[in-house]
Image (cartoon, rainbow, N blue to C red; front, side, top):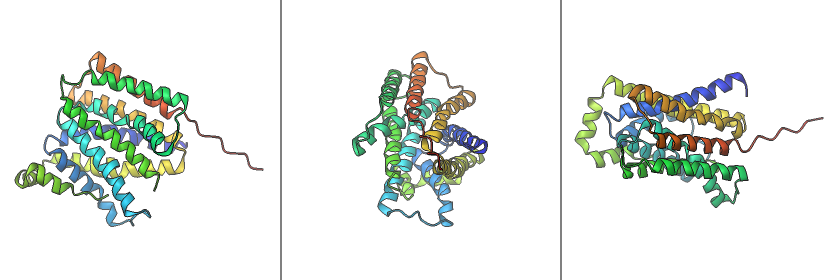
Length: 276
């Protein structure tokens, strides 16, 4: 990769890691439903100026409900109900485990022995994390959070075949019209900055940059940079919120990241054939 593109890949990972902190701050003012609605309202602004991708509406909607709506709404719900930000960033990245597993079921893609080892290691890490559930957050919150990596994985597979969800309506139903509009009317400058950060920067700009890298380079060269996200998210959460991890949870988080590293680094890009 070119040095400039390596910098972009690292920058995207840092943006995504800091987005977990911004989401946690925004959730002090907004419900998970309303924050997700505002996130994608802001992120949808570029749609006014660019044409629709040349894919079927059914596929576009399916990707929207999994890769974006399902992932980010469940992620916001988990954070809002006490799951630590650093832990959330690790759990979301376990999508690599589910992506490989679902690809094996849907497309018959058998993981390599090294990838299988990575799956086992990451699964052990998740089990260690499960052993810490119930102390500072509920089983229900963790269960909802686990929807995020699953939706992420399904969305990844749908993208191989290649936004639009009524989130404001859901916010009105769940929270009621008055609380919803009161949250918007009395939005603080901090809340607005956080929404702009996760809507415009983390969702629109960062995903666009990531897509450009995946277009220009093999996935095996780009995807490993995503391993930086949990470290950035955990470090930022530790600084901003004073988040601490017990031995069992820290061991689980590091084990998950180690398993993911084994999975994404298992396949190296094949060298291009020499031309005469």
